[in-house]
Length: 414
Image (cartoon, rainbow, N blue to C red; front, side, top):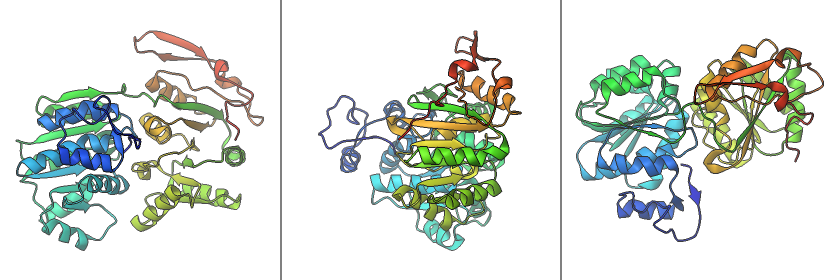
């Protein structure tokens, strides 16, 4: 949950009052010191409480959990049935469970995720939970073993739907959707809106209202970006210099699990506290690493894309893309881990000289050019050609990369 926190008494304007939220939930939000709804919450909560199907387009870190969590809690208190929340990763599932349980401390939940013991999940499912929070693969496992029935699900929330498709969950999502009652409410949230998401909305939702608080592919307003062209063998040296210049929390993305482990060894050898999160780590190890990062025990966290969803940590100063992502959309998700909830943030990416096309695809998605910063080890001649992107009016706009170049790299020294 990402909301402005304050000790002041909220006024009706710019607060959760007037959105149709029940008094007991307003009291819970006040207790948690959440007083100002984010744009996606302000637009989505009234629609969800009315029972409408909603397609919400919003970046990570914009408070989507409350945007579907509050309507789900409130409507389930008023009617028969269960809620089902589908998310792409176990970390995100855990965070959704924590957020919902904070708002309603009495609601019975079941957390159904891979990497955790089946026995405990079976016990939770037998206790007739009001909301099931699940990753698609593990939910399918329980369905096949007849540990759970979806016949009485009256509200479905699909969170980070685009990421679930990126991870290959489309067959499982379709199987789950076919098992759900047709007479239900569906709340779908995604940072981007690929054609596959549009098809899901067309096939499985009833006249969904589309709520868009940021154009698909846009970056959080207060996140500045920077690009270094660097040979693979020079990445470690450049990373070391950056880690010495930035003294806050840093999230580093690696394309592979092996790469993540190598980066951790390099960072620790240089005297920094660091942890890693990827699919080779057990759920307990990933939880421990994330909690260590959140508490400050580890200043640096290295993650792969698959493990990155659910890293909902406020105050991350810098995101470093040590490797560019395989999918352009993942660049948006990655750098959205900084600059959350209106805070300022910075993102630095390393690109090798042969990755010009990958950069062009990212820039086309964002409809903006990433400034290139010089460093002594890599001449920029082949990247200094004019780079063209499309603006929102589909007019060509040419920007010479040298305009974004700076001897100081745009880097903030602290």
